[in-house]
Length: 103
Length: 481
Image (tube, rainbow over all chains, first blue to last red; front, top):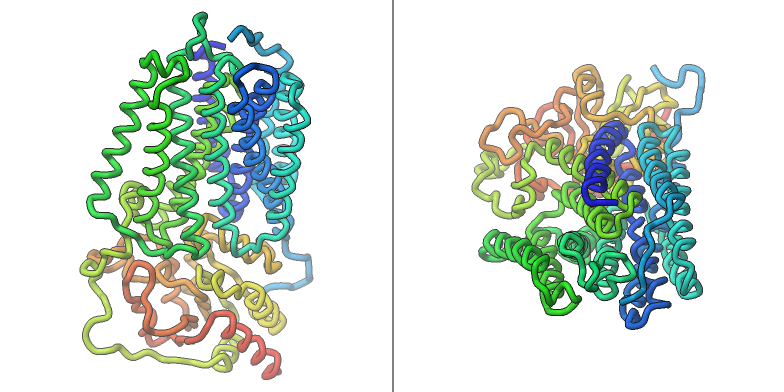
């Protein structure tokens, strides 16, 4: 892919992000931060490439270890981020339907 | 390096695109609590797809990689299960620092082994455009890392939350920032850097770590909602920059989503404090506002009415409507469970109970909502500022627990006040205001006295928030009927 197509995807994604995030209810802003944190760990893709390539190319030793460390850090985030989001979201409950609960 | 990288096959490009779409759906799910769980599942599937695709494209060194995922994943999983909900702000800050560091590591790995990432030209030099992307990605990643570490230390109380003001900090920050930008430009044209040599990359990295620290230390505790949102945004831009280097759509889409998400949250937080983003980032708020406040506690001590837990219980039992206004003090004293119990008891007596949340209450966006949800308060009893503010005029009791500046009417009237123009919860319009505060001594974060304390319809409940609420619960239980 050339630079311009990538840039197009990026710019459109910024706009998608803009509209999607404004539609998030303020009550869920903390889970939003936790889940964005988890998905930004998609950077693990880069770490995986470095870790995998280092295993077959010469002179990739340091690069491989940096990649592996990156995989560890990103994995903490991925598992931790999604799990803690799940835990938080499970706590949001609606009022149980009881006759004349209020007023 | 003769290890040629073939163009990414079409199926993999589509898989990465699908992962990006699933991430969009993950955020979309958060538009309501009902759809949020499904959204989170989409996110998990997207991540599994991105990781699986990458491993299928590069099936070497798998043993070490799976080991690394297991170690990191295990640590993350355990943290997620054990963390207390009140500690969520520092957890998120800590997680941001990991994303930042991961971006730095990926950038360095790509710099040292560019052939593996397919970013070299015919002579084996790193493409100039890739060097710009790499330089930016590493710089943003490093700022995210060190900035988030400082935010983490401040939020977890391991470092004082008050601003640390270096002399000439604006000049230092602007100078370092200019240095990073200029060096990134030079980096793109430097032939030694193209061959993966020379100190430029490491100087950029070092400067970025430094500016991350100097940017965040002057920012005070209650401005943390902005800081943590901003770092959230940076972690996204770092991922996007790396996505450009790797020409990976999943990373670019995600980076753009997270980047704009954090930016929007920062904007919402700034607006809720009526402060400009620049003034928050410049820091120092709450430290040097000494002369600015028009109504600082000067002159003779003003008189206020103090009450006991029994008084508060009696007043609320006989009220028809009670609106509870929680703030950071509720989080600090972990009063949310006792508070919910109090709400339940009042409801049993036929009192209507609602919760009113100011956008910047607490230390991160949505902090109060999570704590109330943790205490089993149904989310449809919890209202945002603009939805409930008109109801204070008709309500019998406004019960303020651990909030201060967000209830200060000076924001509406006193043009010289540092919080002037900030939207506030109109608690003073309620028939009675019950205000829990540890003591009359301290003023809020902004260093401004709150006239609500001294109003005729206010009763101050001076105690630790949790103890006070527990005592009210006891009084409600004992003195009922």
